[in-house]
Length: 140
Length: 141
Image (cartoon, rainbow over all chains, first blue to last red; front, side):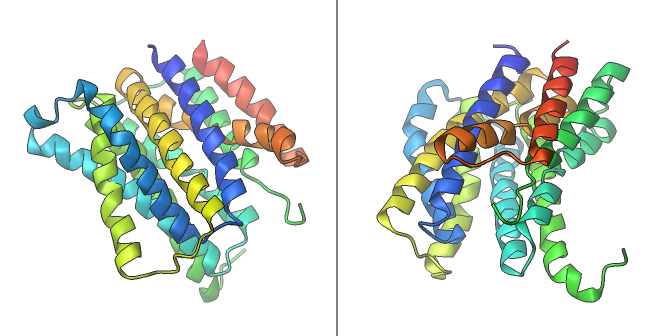
């Protein structure tokens, strides 16, 4: 599987998740949705162990993986907090869509990744597209 | 526009969300250098569990109906598989490209919402879809 195919499947699955989050938002608080989502993650665990090398991993790798999961949850929590404190969803959600900018900056500086001119243009457009796509009209 | 102090009350956490999720993408890349995609999702779950446990133990606004619980669990299963494919993409590609490309997922959400929830696309979202397709074509080249 290439990075492109894996990315497209991710976009499809996360896109479905976005729809489910819309459908679930009137059926529970954001906290409860987070807890039940985590329950779903746990249900998935038995299917992930088939190709597992967890026991042979160095502690550092395990640490990075666990903190990776934490940052995702903390991000969701921070967004809920912003919305609870009166942030307008039409402003806050498109703002949070800028998060790959942080990934991009860290990848360029810390990991030394380099992009061609075409790739740079594509990345900038993707970031802009993410912001525009997240914009929900207030009245709708 | 100069933000007044009250703005930071919500802008602070919103910016923290940007930082946390941006860091998530970076750590996904760093982690998958040594860890396979399914193991990364196992570790990811281990990272999410303490936050969920904190919410449950502290009884922080945990109201939901049965439908909400079913949808929430379904979200976890589908998002978990999506995370695993995201980790697979990160393992194979540059974080500086995979991060922005996978952030195009709201395109699928808004298109599904028009058919499933009868929501209407606004002009901003239509512009977003056009930009997303152009950028995807550039990055796939």
